[in-house]
Length: 95
Image (cartoon, rainbow, N blue to C red; front, side, top):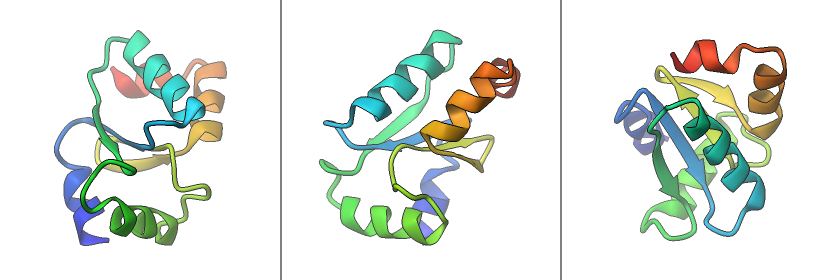
């Protein structure tokens, strides 16, 4: 878990994904559409991906990807990001 907690501080927006996950791709595209330049960690290609996935699950991410941190805080997964966007709050968080 320490690795995930440390990596979430590498950028104002950090996304943990898997390269073959279409939902993760949609979340990355949405966040980038607001001008954000997130740091993205692909768990299925990262050397410590399995440990990071376990840590994300321990943080309450179900499923483990996508997991989005904004301002070092866990915002959540696709459901939370899409909900924030529909309510007009995602752009505000990213700004």
